[in-house]
Image 1 (cartoon, each protein chain N blue to C red):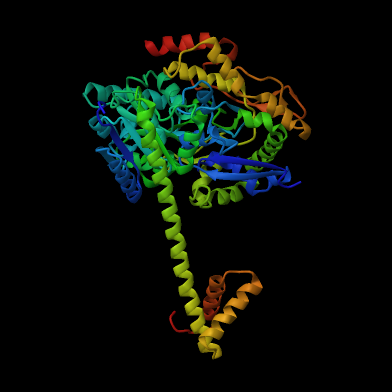
Image 2: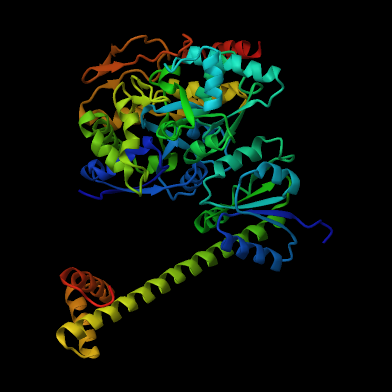
Length: 411
Length: 200
């Protein structure tokens, strides 16, 4: 039965490719009859191009990337669907020592509290602006990324207009720490271990984390070329089962040392295993040796982390509209709803008898505590999933949500 | 011939390959060519050069940054899009397979851009072939050195002639279904572990 289905998968050397890598290296793919070949890439643009021309069938992708593809926002687009998410969380926002000192003088503390850090940053930006200095420059990894949208969300909710009060530029993750140390940027939002990298060098402080801005929020996904999925439904289902088992393995603390060792190999991240531990343990050195424990820093499996919620896709879309990447229309929203495919997730996992969410979308930010939910199969716990500013996102009322955000940011 | 010559920017961290591309473009009659190896400060350079066509290698990790800049930056006065007519699947595949991508300013006619892309693709392929051949030659040379050394060890330790030593290595390689250079390598390692040998 080995090698019944052949799948070519692209990935970027980032920690959240772990589920895909474990599926192959720990043998879950093989056990499901999937001959999974992994291809390491150097840019998201390459992943997009190679999935479009058929070199890859599936790939590790930024959650908003398949949506941007299907909306025609990218130079080379192909219909791409998302039947599986590769985890929740994993990112932090790091600032330079100079910015951190300025923020500390205005009340920021090394507690990762987004509200306090944001208020201090707002004050610091106002001081700089009054002194006639250039706006601070923040880097994200891609315009269509969770990093970009959560940074923008955090800034805007703290009264900082990301379009006017700061410059936002794109820097590849492995170059973030260097760019910060060299003073080319003043801060950045990226996945681990590229935040801990600046802290370890003594050139940056972690100001806040994705898990505090929006707890248990979407990040990377498995993007699948739609035409391939249609022609290979059995192969895709087998792959999703392998990924499900791999994700469960990645979540289990007993496997964390093995996982860190696996990801450290030169063909994957090529970084020492101890650099992978903060994201797995949730124990972050935020700067100056201050250790903070972050709940749900990165969640590869628990909390239905792999379920492709349509509300996640729609939230990304509202932020694309918010920051002027696309005009809202009913047709666009429909394309977004059809991009994430919980139906394929359920169909593939049903034979395993595991807990499956019954709904395709949820009100994001509604769960203040971990909550057992109605699901098919075994019991399932979701959340908490709150936004730090207490807002909620109802996927049935996206226009109201977008209108309230426009009003808030244009003040 | 009324159209003014195109300004072409080549971004490639590999200096030799960049030179190969530049030479090809010059042979094809292009004169306004700029080559950049390092993307630091590239926005300013693009504003100065105002390129019509940008050729970039796919290994470059800064592609996401560049694409974003082409779409948004104030440095870019005219919008720049990815090269080809999207319907030309064969051209897209050829470029991605060769490891090159090109971006052109909006409104440039396809027939003016296509020859540039075709040239870049063929030069990228030629460069890969050259690198591969060079790699093979290096491997061969390395292998020959190992075999020579292994022969000397056998000649000294077992009193064989050079031909006999070579025949023994070849027979062992055939029996074990391995390359003769691998057998030589193992023998050299073993000899160095077993005692002082010349040449180590």
